[in-house]
Length: 263
Image (cartoon, rainbow, N blue to C red; front, side):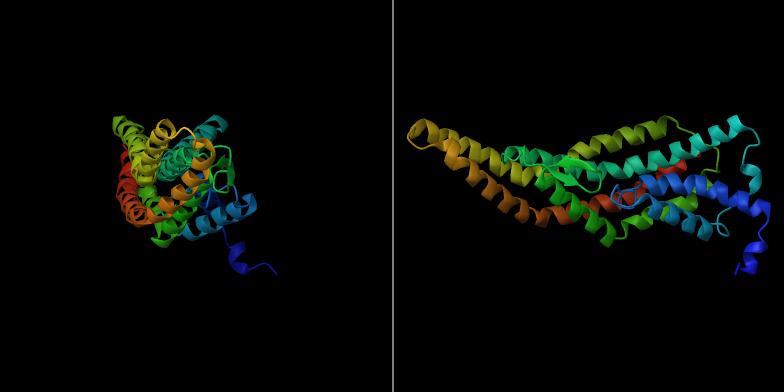
C-alpha cells in the first residue's frame, strides 16, 4: 500500500529533489571508497537517492533553480558534475600518492610483473601498492574521512547554489598544489623501504665486483623481496600518522576548495 505521505508530494518537491540529486549523485559516484568500481552501480544509485531524500528538508533548494530549456538543463548538469568532480579529484590525490609509492617500491623489489587487481580503481597495481591502498582506505573510514564529504556537500548548497560555478585562479592553484603534494606524499610514504632497497642494490653491486663467484642476480632477488616486505611492514609506524595528518588536512582544505568555487 502506498504511503499517504508520498501522495502529498507536490511537483515542486519532486523538482527540488532532482536538483539535489544532480549534485549528490556525481559526488557519491566519484568520491573515494563509496565511488569504487567494486561497489555495484545499483547500490551507489540507491545511496544517492537516499542521501538526496535526507537532504531535501535541510538544504536551501527550490524548483525554480532548474532551467526551463533543454540546453540550460544540460549546462546545469555539466556545472554540477564539474563541481563534484573537482572535489572528488582533490580527495583522490591522497590515495593516488599511496598507490604511486607502492608501485615504485614494488618495482625496486623486483615485483614489477607481479601485479594484482586494485578493487578501488579496477586497475592493476603492485602487491605493495594494493596493501598500502587498503590500509589507507581503512584509515580513511576509521577517522570518519567520509564525513568530510557529507559535511562539505551539505554546506556547498549554501556556498555554491546549484547551477552556479566559479572556477577561478584560486581553484586552479588549489588543484595544482594538491597535485604537487601528491608526489611529496608519495616520496614520504616510500622513503623508508625505498632507501633500504637502494642500499641493498649498492651492496649487491659491491659484492658482485669483489666476489664474482656469487650469483648475485639469483641470490639477491629473493633477499630483496624479503627485506622489502619487512620494511614495508615496519614503515607502518610512520605510514599511519602520516596518513591521519593528510586526512586531517583534507578535512580543512576540501571545504575551502568548495567555498572558493562559489565565487
